[in-house]
Length: 231
Image (tube, rainbow, N blue to C red; front, side, top):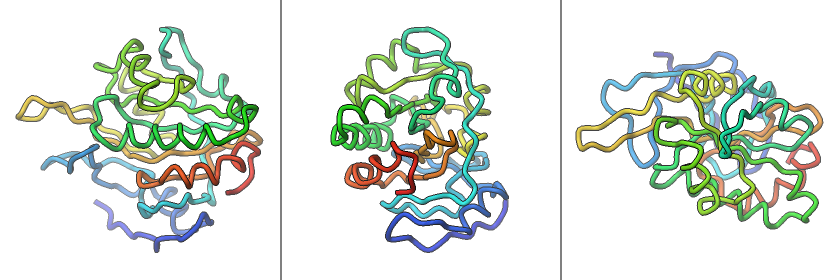
């Protein structure tokens, strides 16, 4: 296990060399589940939150991520090539699961509220992609039923086989573990809870948001993200 160093909490979006260095080093972290702590003996995987404070402000990364080469299944049951379908479009990508009791639906709701503050033309440009970390339960039909209520009907829901999803997440520094059944019968999905914004001009992931980001921050930043500018 690598020793984790955390950057000071920024008060506004900014470039943070320590974050970029932590991402490049792929420091090992123990993941936390939505609504719970990591079970004893849980595995540690590389996660984008290395050095990232759980702050309300977004962080502009010194070393942007290349968009994952990821082909999954959308809510209509058709193949969805993430790179091809979102090419040249402002895109927010989040990995989570529909049975999450708190963080995942709150994140989707915050983004949905902020999106509605945009002019209609910009709303149409913005792509929000939710990739499940619990594909066994999150079928295309389940995602199609959950997303409109948790977020917005325009949000893209993707599922597929877990190894493919995990590999795609790792390309963005997001760590996820296979869903685990607890002693009480509940199933917990361990995953990084960050949202990464991709620029329409470079198709690179250049802004990182933590799980505590409120809708007001997204509302403030989205007009610039739609244009490919730094928030």
